[in-house]
Image 1: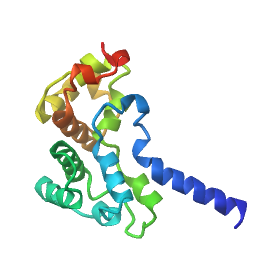
Image 2: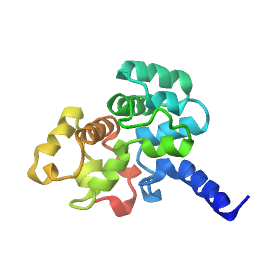
Image 3: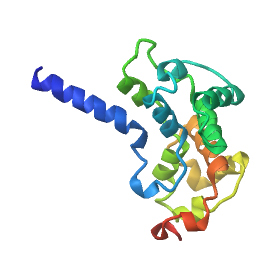
Length: 184
């Protein structure tokens, strides 16, 4: 095996194993997993066929049934988070039906609500008071994008919907579960 091929295999394996944690830095492990993270974990354990899911269209109820049967140990919030992620983001737009490698499939997945929150919410205001401590339904989270400073966030409508649904399911996070350096 040539050094170039060996390097490509190692890089590919690293991408596959780390794809769900691109933005899920260790300091945010206290937050519930987003849909992408959970989906990749289920695919890595062979509980779901990632290629089949990427090309499928279904409603939230159908996705919930699929996920619950794939891994009955998931909490109801984890099932709801993943089902909402899949309902908004599947099928993956522009995905080649010929893509088969785990790396191609994982790389094609859109960011999930947790990744979007980490990437967009902590740079302009306190992550705790501006995001983690808020108790809103999905419509309440959608309304945050009506504020002039949030309108400018570089997020697509699907990303905003993914963020709103993740946040409605998983926020607020109890005060004592948030690391001290992220409180206020």
